[in-house]
Structures are given as C-alpha cells and as structure tokens.
Image (cartoon, rainbow, N blue to C red):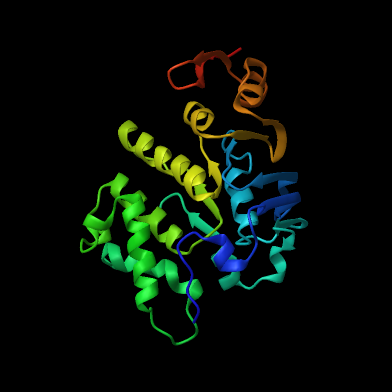
Length: 277
C-alpha cells in the first residue's frame, strides 16, 4: 500500500492548496423535531470555525451531519467539491478526523495503541500496520506532546493528557478536516489553553480545517478565525468574532445581558454576562 508523508495533501491526493469544506443547506430532524434548519458555511485550509450557541441549538448535530454519522434530510457536504455521500466510511475517515466530547474505552489500551487506531482507515482488509503507519502515529504523538506517554494505559491519564491523545489519534488519520466537540469540556483552565493553542497551531502550521464546538464564548472568540452562532437550529449570525460576539446577539440568543470588551493582550473579545436583560 502506498504511503504518504504526514499531512502532505499534495502527496496524499494531488489536490493542491485550495482544498475546502462546503456545507450547504443542512436540515436534520429528530423524529418530528427539526434540529437543524438550512445551515451552511465554507471553510478553507488553515481556518478555525467556532460553532457556538445555547444547549439544544444543534451544534453537536451539525458536527455529526458533517461527518455523516447522521444523514441530513436535506443539504450536502462537499470536500473539495465532492459530495461526501459518494464516499464510504473509510474514505470519509481519511478526510475527516473527529475528537468527541467524552471518548470512552472499554479496555485499558496503551496510548500508542490508541493513536495507532487512527491508521485504520488506511489499512486494507486483514492487513496489519506497516512501519510507515507506526512512523505516522509516532509523528502525531510528537506533535501533540504525547510520545512520552506511549506505554501508559489510556485510562490512567489526566483529562488534559487523554484529550491530547485523542487529538493525536485523529491526526494519525492524516485528515484535512478536524471536527472537535467541546474539546476543553471538564478541563481546568491551563489544560483548556494548552489544547486550544495546539489546535490553533495545527490549523496554521499544518493547514488543517478545524470546526470547533464550544460553550465557552471567550475561548471560542479567542481561538476561532470565524464564528457561527446557532439559535434553535438556525444560523443567527456568522463572521469574524467581533461581528458575532455582540451585546444584542448575546441577549437575543442566550436571553441574558452582557458586556463586551476587547482585550489587546489576547487580541480577542471578552464576554461578561450581566444576568437577565
């Protein structure tokens, strides 16, 4: 089986530098409840898109539709102009890496074994990982700072360590697109910053397209190039953080007053909730 250098899209698929993700008119129902209504956006190489909104607004459902874990009633997901429905599950996993909210493991796999699982989409049926697959897994661990944890059982790690391992597993898939669902959930502030700094760095240095779901408006504004604010399954607003994080928008979508300021040290917007408007 042909091997490729880590994160080299040109060698992997010959697509060049204009790879993009296009989501058009996604509509999804849970039984009779419409969870998403005509949601769409475009994402280019190296961009981080933050998806924000209150509980039940459709954030996680949108990620699952992008990854085709859920099949939308209407709408399309295109990777470099190709409909994702034309791809089988393995091919989708070669393009899209997923970091779920709270990954669970039924067996205490070693950290290295967990990361090596990311190579599964590239393996033929009944084949074993090659030295090339092992090298790619090791490189993913180096990038995420988890190589020193290689022999440790996954269930013995701290929350921050485990999250970096799951990101390494997703990177071992060699995706162009990384979907993260609340990657800083249950982490203390230093680990939150550590994970988000890593994600931002990967987007900029490796050209990943990142879709990041977050409940934390301040962190989402700080680490996203653009934001998409959902309300009841619809796009309320989208654009640069300064256009989306507004007092009017927070009041309308979250039902609370807020004071918005700009921090020059972090070069990002800060939201201070003030209670009922």
